Length: 497
Ligand code: GLC
Image 1 (cartoon, helix red, strand yellow):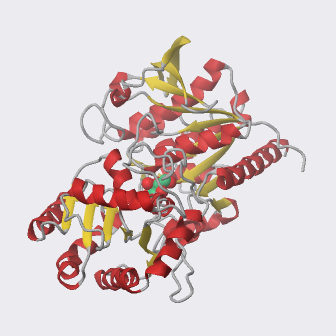
Image 2: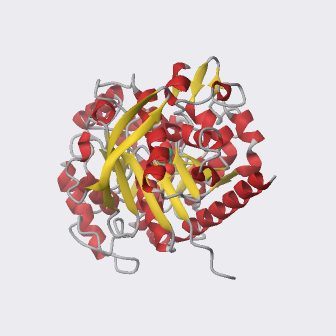
Image 3: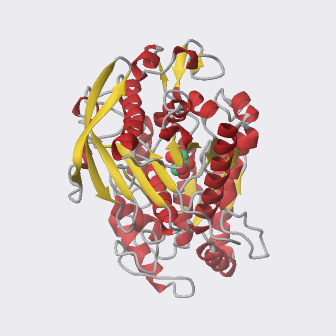
């Protein structure tokens, strides 16, 4: 095959690891950019410069840092910083604009809440366009991530269509369809978009602006983060009100499973765990298990299986099911549970109460703690992930890389990445169940517990299978490369009509 032509790719995103991270989207933007740049493409990322990023010491202002952002009827300014993406040739631009981004985190503005988000992310989208003109760097592909960048494909098809930027194809990735970015229609004027985009086959939804919907209508190609989720969102149950649109665009919608960053999540080299290990040399894992038990205040006992949770504690993740069966598990099974995460106050309380009722056996660390996340994933025997829906999910892949077997609901990326255990045959990489009920989770945990005690050889085989599965970005980056090519062909064809 002839070598693929080198492309210029602009990633527009609300967050990107390692600079600022709320969820998996940030990991994907960082790791995918790196993987695509490794294939020889010119990849640049643009994100806001949040107050929470002031520690990023490698950032330097552009030579000509003052960017004029052309909003509807007025101009605003941003100061642009440039920063290499660590370990990569890709680079990142940060947009400094204090009125919107002088805030420690991503989705709350300086006012401390979400009220300005329509303006804040319109500003990001518009500024990404103006930055290309400012740099006179015109991408072949603009790759947009989630609702916060939904206006970008619309700008490319309207205001920018006759400019050199208008040749760019857009790819819109859905990381989570539940968040769509609903705002008052005055956003259209603020954005400086033509009023005609505010219509049912466009930005409008029940009289308001729906940013994701607009982006999905206008994008050249659409991707989401697993093949199963790509199918689920075309059904009424999974479509969050957009299944008609997604079916209409089904020919342009492709599910690509995320990879994981194997430099950060590799048990053989991980500097954040007390002992390293790999398939075939598992002694270090036992040491990690003891360290995990100590860190959580669990009884240090190598014979009991440890089940861990590493997750944001939100409805999506289905962890209320685990809370509901906590006492039953402790009474009926000889196991330990270690929960790491923050989120919903009621759920935090429920886990805390369980820990109090079952000292030494049930523990909850209610925080975001990267080091403990590595230790939990490395030291546990099982990871519990009963998500109600899961576009891709990353924790289950981290877990498998460390020989920690995931117990997951068969949905989205969990169904695509965890292979069901077939008893007696040593096949599989984890344990799956179908119905999002407490009983289904209880019995599946019971099944895994019985396997742990009664079929240790098979369990070791599953561990090995899990550790040998390929979750690197390489394959998925290759698929994105194809998608960029298809998007560009489609865009060029549209221009020559
Ligand atoms: C969102 C999804 C999660 C996915 C991540 C990265 O956080 O909820 O399933 O892994 O985005 O794409």
